[in-house]
Length: 142
Image 1 (cartoon, rainbow, N blue to C red):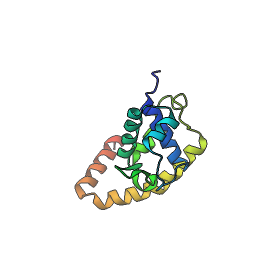
Image 2 (cartoon, rainbow, N blue to C red; image 1 turned 90 degrees about the vertical axis):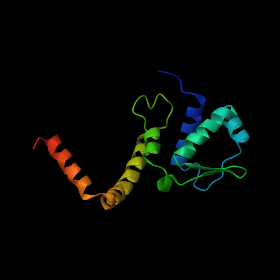
Image 3 (cartoon, rainbow, N blue to C red; image 1 turned 45 degrees about the vertical axis):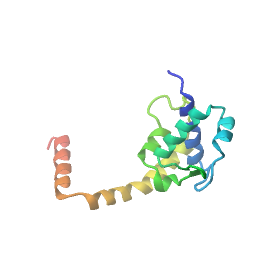
């Protein structure tokens, strides 16, 4: 198995801390210099990780002001969960994927999924619904 790059380790550590509320929504992170020292990585790797988390809607980077944590329940998407629970070698990669974390993710999904279906249904056209019906019949061999 290939070793993880520094920015991946930093991103995983920050995602885990955000998920477990060690870093709370609205909280300001330390400066890049302080973070790079505390996480034992160079600033370039740290910046790559921070940009990745910003793209996942976990961080709000405000130049000249600081880096703030967003509420992942309101902003983050499915890519956040995919990153938390990779398909292969999750435990070997150093992620804290344990039963508690899986229970938390399922609880979040159970709350989120019905709203997602409602939103999709309000935006769906009759053509979209016909496609769903066609594909379900095709898969069931009806």
